[in-house]
Length: 284
Image (cartoon, rainbow, N blue to C red; front, side, top):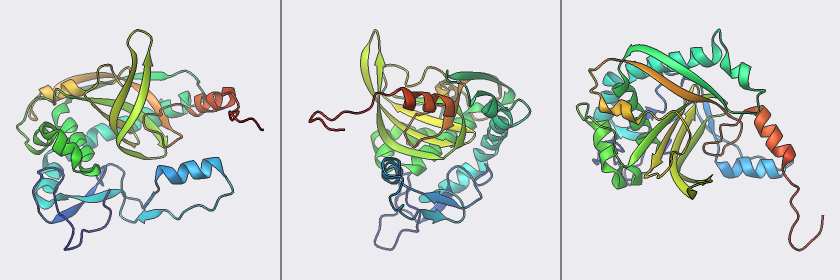
């Protein structure tokens, strides 16, 4: 993500409308959705290097003092999302935060469980289309221009408040996400094995920021995760209210790997049960 203002010699192409315009800083997620504190940004290479050698000298992270985000939206697009989409988005954030960290405290309840946990969330008279359009805006804002160029229908859906219907070539999934880490993955490939259909390589964009992981799957043949498909919310107009019931994975962010929602207990078990690596040339 472009975390510094573009210079006069850099392109100023808005990720949402695609026009060449002066760019503004877009908080990802919005500032009002618990994104106010300074954010330390590191690439997955830093994490993997530290994991392979705990004694290695760590690279200094890039710190964004105002919260995580990027110079990727023009002023009109930034204002549009802030006016029409963010207020509804904020309601969903408060709901997810309450489910994970409130009286039921699902984040604490399931962190020691090795099996995947699920929760069904019910909401009365919300406006799901506004929520989905904000998610689409965030995913476009955090990604290289290629996402909007290759899927202009996603850009059109997010940029036009009156557009109805989430793009057919894309699927949007939600998972509850307890952290502790925040993840951005733009165009990652993940492999899923299926007993009946073989192996599928999924191309995904993920923004995992408590209380949700937002997953965009490109042209999938099989679901990238088993539940939490929110694509049909896009069939509503932004002025339509609806009662919502959605089952989601209760996920955690213990690693930087896209779609890794394993609990701390599951991660520990998987690590301890893994066979020691033996190089083909022998040795210890």
